[in-house]
Length: 493
Image (cartoon, rainbow, N blue to C red; front, side):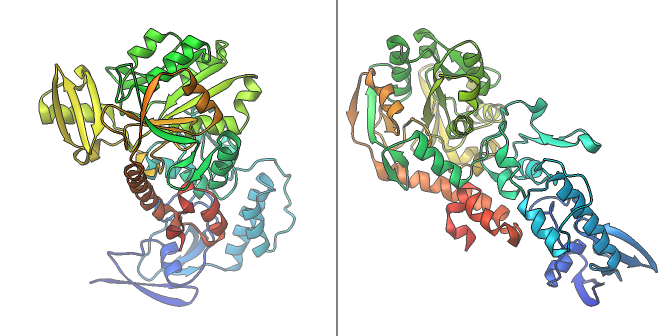
């Protein structure tokens, strides 16, 4: 096998031509030579935006400066990572970064290493260094692309489309985990949560027994209403009674849509609530109809959503967004159990190929006992859920919450007898929602819920492991505080 020989800071390094390391940075790290970076992560494509990894190379007697993170290893390459010229370049870069973000601890630590204690440039009041890690991890690994780089030159920024509240962010926290500053966590139009955020939300919005497996709860039971709906029809009953008694002005629900599978809609009449019955198994953003309701003067609103959408609304509540813009608003969160959602077009195509039926014509779609069930014209068709892995929506693998742990009340079919819904009440508002509803009760199978919840968390931990493992040592604290899944110490050991 062909070998490549390069020299870094006087150290001879030999590597296979067709294998790792592929770049100067990788080769240096394997040799124990430290090159500072701010925009690099081994799980992402090399980017070279921060320029802090600049090194000097010599080839065929000619010298030049390159970024180590994306310059390939070449035969007879001579690399100097700490020449006076290289150090001067890094100092200038750090001075410019500190002038932009003068309060960022990570930058100040790096600057101290290079003897910079007072930059020469006029300080600004920003906290984003434009490294690109946040939107790259969101696009390349999570697959959601909720944020992106915008504009050029001095106007360059990272934001959601038009700076509006994101309808794509799922609150997984991957962007905050890789961000070398606190910029991402301080934004109000995306919704990453740290483990500290989740704890604060539980203390502020929820009350009851703290269950490590299923979250804070006041009671758990299997319920069945008199309304014909998905399983026990509990969500439909709660919303219907809430509207009729005046507890609620309106509700945000998912209605069937032939092109998208489902879309979030604002309803304020019981007939419209009945039309929205049934689980859709596609991810829909609740932001647009919720804002529509608030802008129309509705102040007592129930939001029905999957765990990712519940996190979105809770983050906005925690930031004081609703209190600031819509004083007096009361939002009741009804969280649905969710293991994963599907890309509707892909799912529709797969079901057509399996059974020769059109998913748009389904009278009922349900996941039960590991099977995906479609009912059309009184006939049921089913397949194993694991057969639909390719149809799972991007981002679902980074969610570790099966049971909507931050909702006021959580509802799902797992752990309850046929024809019943599992109900987990988590707050006083959740109890208030149940007061007017009429239903019968039975015991739940807690172990069944815990088993599936643990499986989902394990899957999310596995997907996050690569991100966590690639964080620089200076992020050690953030590893333990930033992403919700990082509370699992098995990843960090």
